[in-house]
Amino acid sequence: MRSLGNRWPGSLVGEMKKVKVEDAIGMVLGHDVTRIVPGKFKGPGYRKGHRIKREDIPGFLDLGKEHIYVIDVKEGELHEDDAALRLTHAFSGSGIVHAGPREGKMDLLATHAGLLAINIPLLERVNSQKGLSVATLHDNTPVQKGQVVVSTRVIPLIIKERVILRVEALCGRDARRLVSIAPYRRMRIGLLVTGNEVYRGRIRDRSDDYVGVKVKHHGSTIVKKIVVPDEENRISRSLKELADAGSELILVTAGLSVDPDDVTVAGIKRAGATVGVYGSPVMPGSMFLYAHLDRIPVLGLPACVFHHTSTVFDLVFPRVLAGQEITRRDIIRLGHGGLCLGCNECRYPVCPFGKG
Image 1 (tube, rainbow, N blue to C red):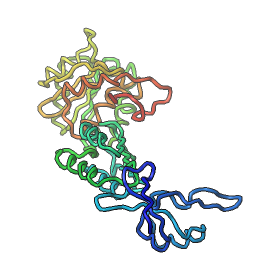
Image 2: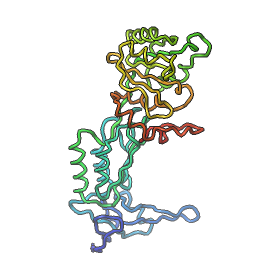
Image 3: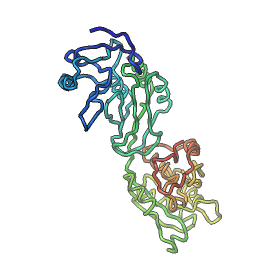
């Protein structure tokens, strides 16, 4: 075997050698090997970077390849697939499974529905390492079981092991993994519907068709619903009644504007709730309210939840179900990306809404 002494294009390290195919088991193919079926197919029978197995030998011989060029992987170097697998183990937190490796690429998938958590500072540090590419969905994206949330690739066929060791050390020093999925809690939810027009039957209560459907979609249950007129005392008493019924989260809709006859906010305060946020930089959903009645989160949902497919409710509700404590800072940050495009066919969360 004679070393050609040339660096393989696209590889940071590694030299090529010409070897007999029978001697190449366990080695890394340094070039595509073309397979031709007259009139049917012409393309790679074996791809560059393929790790050669004993069962591949007849196939190479059938293609007329008694000798092939392989990449010599030396001590302190890693094949792209081995490196990709080690990266995946370093990255992955709870709720993640992987597919691959193939040609240095690994996909990370969600094992269950939930809220995606991406450690953005760690992601930036990893992507600053030479020869690595890690692409993710946005932090706090609601995802479904089996959905690809991260795709990572080792760019060269052969990479210095010290690059992977450096990434493993970065991930090991960080308390949070680069990617994880927080499962949705199955919560008992109380629903308070306010409004004279609904209470007196002048218009139909549509809360089940809009809010109720989304609650069910995320695996939670509305344990009690109360409809009340625009009366501060009634709103206050009903909130306490929902809390006493075992609600772990209370949703209130609507009457959250600054009109003089909208007294929902006053009723929430009268019940003893502490309002942390009133108003959000999200359209639709600017009159959103977030409060606590004792330890029970209260989400005040403006009337837009009945007129728009995706609103501030879709941005905040999954985060509460995933166990996040919403802060004023969290709501402020929604402003970047908080303008819904109002598409004719809503595809949220596959869109920029709420992805600042």
